[in-house]
Image 1 (cartoon, rainbow, N blue to C red):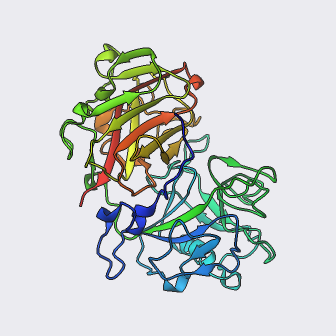
Image 2: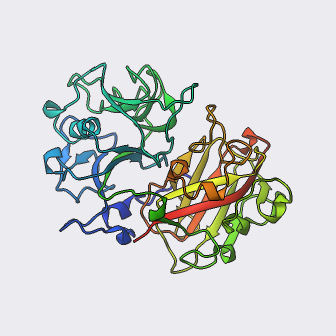
Length: 400
């Protein structure tokens, strides 16, 4: 039932192929709104990548493959760093520092713009929609991140790697690879960062996409899980769930798009079931396959009833599932403990009306392929009380 790691080239739609053709946005002969420019698996050599024309790099390319930096149009707006096997997404605005990161990844080693062991690295802040938006310190202020590498020219896969502070390999790494693929966490895309030389050989594959249109604000996106969504009344779609114990309410209530600030009579506006590895699923219907950009989840107003490891899965055959978004603590839940898997009213007064118009609370969906079946899932609801209890769930797509 839980086929978490079966993949179907999860970002093909970003390339303008594989189901995401609705995202073509008119960039001359290329036309993509999102373009894959760099990919790396455990083979090949990041010091001398295979170069391909802009718009022709694919997720199925092997080794280290990219478009050379000089051939990449410079008018991109945001850089998306993600991977094949994990749903985490790290999004960065187009700045001089992120351009230096891109120029290091997409060039031969002799032309890297970030020097080996540079203690200053390249400081960055994650943009809205990232899986861990506005990373917080104990004071509640935004914490800057750093891209840094430790490649003296002798290591095939030591690349600019995202971490919390200098030096990233000793002070926590989120995305990238330090040293060899068999140590220092290997090829990684993590929510909780890795430190030190342990771990590796993950078998994952990294991707860098460039966004070539303005992300805009909340008015640029529409939630399809509402009674008045573009596909019709989402409360009338086919809704299913895992587990058979502790069931109360109706999963279709997740699409009523109504704000709730009280726990009273929750069975009339939410859905609960007990399962340590729980999911709630919606079937958009035959012919309604859709590619979404962002998601958010609002849980039981009094809290609890959530996992500390959550994800969105998508499928077109209701059997093989792709993990297309992933998080632990929900974006901007107003806490610093990184444990609240859903937004809820009791911690930050979160409800549908003040979340649908706040992009800072949204979580990116990495996949631009159109899917029919969608799940909101988690694998540790025993983190709280063993129940999944949701009030609202959104799947948001950019307006055309």
